[in-house]
Length: 143
View (cartoon, rainbow, N blue to C red):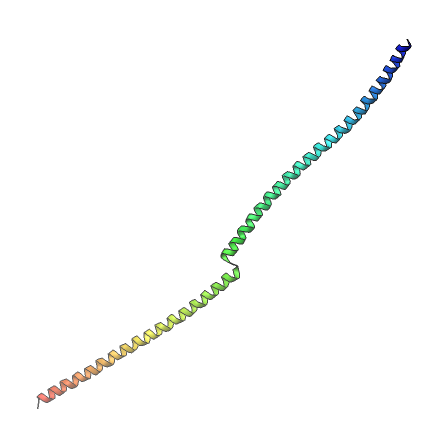
């Protein structure tokens, strides 16, 4: 019986150890479960951050394209002040051209007027010469 009692005591000790081991395993599993829930929350946060970063990255890419297009447009068409200077220069040249055309038209009118006066003078001179010629011819035939 002593052997049976020793076995029973050993069984009680083994059972106590077994419960103690099971309790420590339960505590450890509880800690692991808590840590796993923390890991899941962190993973969800990481996913949300990744999505936000993707959105901001797409937004940055869009802004980069818009800025590039604006720079190309500005390089192609120049800045406003250079366009305004160009328009001012064209207006000044147009005014100069108008003045030159007016001067040429005035000169053309003067030359035309001089030709008209010259024609009139020539008509009168030829008329007087003809009258003198007729007078000379008629005066000479009557004598």
